[in-house]
Length: 233
Image 1 (tube, rainbow, N blue to C red):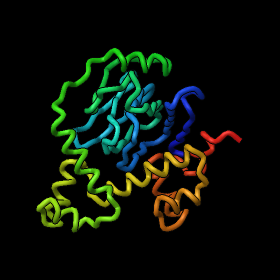
Image 2: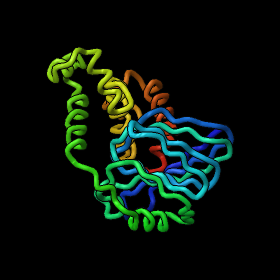
Image 3: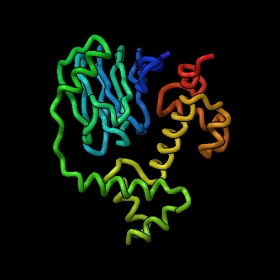
C-alpha cells in the first residue's frame, strides 16, 4: 500500500483530532477543507500544501498551519511521515489564525510540543474586511437550495463569470466547493457515530460506494475506517 492514513482522538478529554500519514510512494489528496484549523507536522520526507493563497512546502521538522474552511490539496514525497492535528478554531492555541503559515525547524516530538509551538507564534494581523466578504460568498454557495445560476445572478455575474471569479478566490469551482462542504459535514457525522449508509444519505450522496470513493480521495481513509477510530464499542 502506497499510503496509510490513521485517525484517532487526540485524547478523550478534548475535541482535537489527530491524523497520521505514512507513505511509501508519492501520494496526493484532493482539494478539501475542514471546520477546524489543520496543523501538519512533517517528521520525514516532504509535503506540499496548496491553497488559493499559495503553496507551502514543508520538510522534516517543519509545521504547516491551515485555517479553518480554507480549501487545500496536498502532495508529497516517498517515505514521508506527517502528523496532523485538527483543532477547533476557538481553541486558545489557534484562535486568530486566518491565513496559512509555516514554521520552520520546529521538530516537535509530541502533540503537546506542537500546540506549544503554535501558541507562541506571531499572529497575522490581516484586515478582516476581505475575510468577511469571503465568508459571506461561501455561505451563499453552500445554500443548496439555490442553483449556481441563481447565485451568480444575485451577485450580478454571468454564470461563467461567477464560476471563474469564485475559483480565483477559493481555488475550486462552486460545485467542487459544495462537494467539499458535504464531505466535511459527513466527516463530522461519522465522528459522532453516524452509520455510514445514514451519513451518505443525510449528506445527499447518490449511493454509499460513491460517497466512499470521494471521502477516501479527500481524507485518505474509507468512511468506515474513519468512523471506527472515534466510535467506542
